[in-house]
Image 1 (tube, helix red, strand yellow):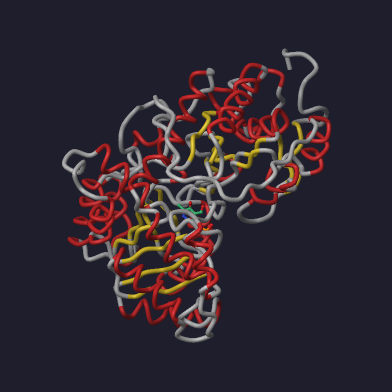
Image 2 (image 1 turned 60 degrees about the horizontal axis):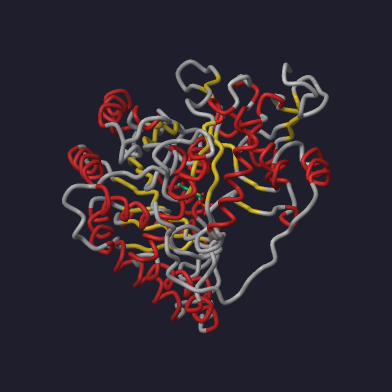
Length: 469
Ligand SMILES: Cc1ncc(COP(=O)(O)O)c(C=O)c1O
């Protein structure tokens, strides 16, 4: 695979922190083996998330300077709303400070305690926002999407069988809408095909239930459709994006991903009654309907970012860089989820650390070890994040996969820096048997992965003195 060509040049640089292994160990212990609590000055390469970590373009920085900060009906809002409408095609555009605020507002006006929301896989904040209202967040991804070794083009697809079964079981009284996350972050950043979007849309239209996209990575999903789906190679990204959204009735959007900004989000809806209720709640929680928790300059940067993200050359570099990173990991013997996702590569921690049982958080162990090894921060997407209660049996259920997500910020790191990460991950795999499992020392009632404290099982050192541990 050729090195992906960066279709930009660098204008501003930021010094990367380099600190000693001894200091990293001290910081890891002080953070309760939770990398969310590490100071960013102690991170050499930060792959915790691709959310809000993009480098903005010169045009976006220029747009910030021209942002209109009027409280009501600013010029920046008009430009933002026109851009979103032209691109997404939905009737109502409601700005929010980030994606989860859009989710929280939509769910508050549509869900009751009995409700059920099917999705391919709910992202953690989406699941938490649904469950916070006492409703059920149901994952309906195709079975292939849960097998880390299967090389298939669209592992983010929703299973129509699972969706149909959910409809049979809960019916229209309990399912107010269906969601589809493009690309499917929690299932490995895997795309959803246009054929699948159309099937889900047909199902929803037949049953008169709205389809709402979780649209964070809509442009990356469109790129995969263009490159992988029969009949789309000659279609432009803009055309594919328009077709995608024409099949739904609204979306939640975190602008921190495919709008290439550091903060922002929005909710789009076609239904007037939902939009009215959402706008009333927006005023209560976020702000006036023409800024919704953002500054005018943020709206201006989002509008510019949404125009830039559809550039084919940008997307080719973006997806190519992540794919190349995955290849570097594989060539060094690090087991990864296949195929490589759009915004991240995911290390398969069950395979990398087979001696650590799922109850001892193998993906969190790998995440901590990677920081210790090279100052690289990834994030656990496994039992720490997703253990949950089965709504029918009340039993605790672990997710099928234990993944370490290495999310690549947009337009930020070079190939050399990602090769450094791949080498470090290979050293963790090679010395993996020395690593001890982790147990919870303290956890909050919801979204525990953000703030929980962990410790090596039974106390003692994180790295055992001999490999028989
Ligand atoms: C698929 C998906 N949905 C929703 C969100 C929430 O967005 P935000 O972090 O802006 O609240 C994220 C964030 O990572 C995401 O990846």
